[in-house]
Image 1 (tube, rainbow, N blue to C red):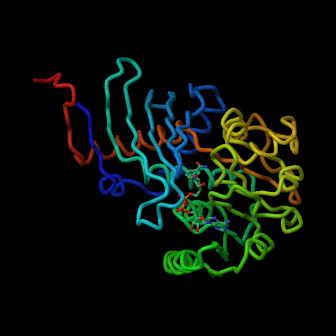
Image 2: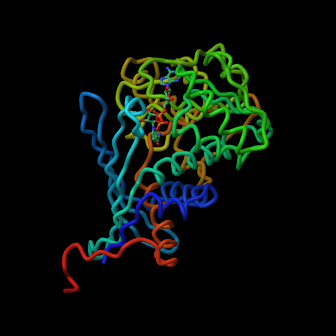
Length: 330
Ligand SMILES: NC(=O)c1ccc[n+]([C@@H]2O[C@H](COP(=O)([O-])OP(=O)(O)OC[C@H]3O[C@@H](n4cnc5c(N)ncnc54)[C@H](O)[C@@H]3O)[C@@H](O)[C@H]2O)c1
């Protein structure tokens, strides 16, 4: 039997504490070599793309494999649809039997936010008080939720090229958290004010110049997750300790993909992976004045670790619909 879980059922289980714990397990497993994860495969389309992501992870109490089918269509908000929508299948690696067939949209957003929170916990200055966010979409919301869990943020500064979206996130954030929330007119004001900067746009050209980034800043570079995308001036990367989520994916489609392909950055300038830092194999932040960048492309093991926890809790609550797709029990 497979458990079918809709977005509404998944939202009854999901919260940022669960997502942060699952992210830690996923990146620890990565750092300790307990994952099997080929790079994601892309289907390019005229208006966006699809990705097939599949892999296996050995969690402390479960061995899980599975598949995510996820799109990115940046024009979707104009037609009332999310930019990113996803489906996740969870399977038993021992037999291949399907455990769950679940919406993956909110799991994607939460696990992406949680990876940003985890990166901030090991790479940002512990006294970081001002969070700057460029791009006020779905990923911005979970980045804010996660960073506020790990650092004593007092002010969130938000900008978006679509003013209405920036305003709506300013109102939402001010209503949800006891922090000052400011609308910034440009990426420059946002970056200059930030101790922690999140970039979460589908930009194909740098939005953040080197001279705007103060010593000691940590950047979660979230938006670049396909070939040709970039949000940071390559000079920001050259000045930073760069931590990727996965070297193969980051080289192909992360923030480093364009500067590497143009010779503006060398592979040896990449410091390591978040998994290595979480597993204690490499130090995270070492000096207060360091600039650090987390280059996030999104890993299937993040989806599997969080998807498994959601599935486990939903099943225990009796939520979702059991379905015998193959007719094995008839
Ligand atoms: N790293 C990961 O794991 C991961 C996961 C999911 C999505 N993403 C990527 O993150 C990006 C954002 O995804 P989303 O779901 O938040 O999309 P979204 O459409 O909900 O939000 C993107 C926002 O960026 C704004 N924007 C676009 N160009 C801008 C610019 N030049 N300056 C300022 N704002 C700009 C848009 O107006 C929009 O509000 C996409 O590129 C997506 O592919 C990455």
